Image (cartoon, rainbow, N blue to C red):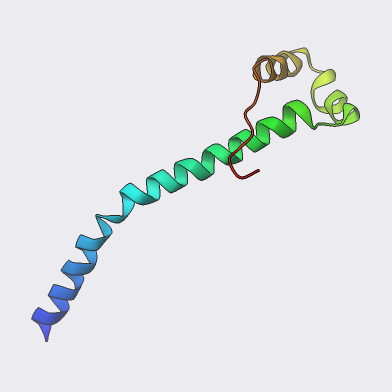
Length: 79
């Protein structure tokens, strides 16, 4: 019984080593889509009043917004 349990644990651990490669690709794609969506919202879809409140009163934050939004933001796949 102990040998059977040990083999089951070994098989489970061996299968886990195959998982990260595919999970990493999916996680990277999801993270990229989230970041692109957030950048699109901050750069293109932010209301003027919100921009003034968050960035307009602070020159450093306003310049950071300009630096981020100077380049076009790509639309995430599936949007």
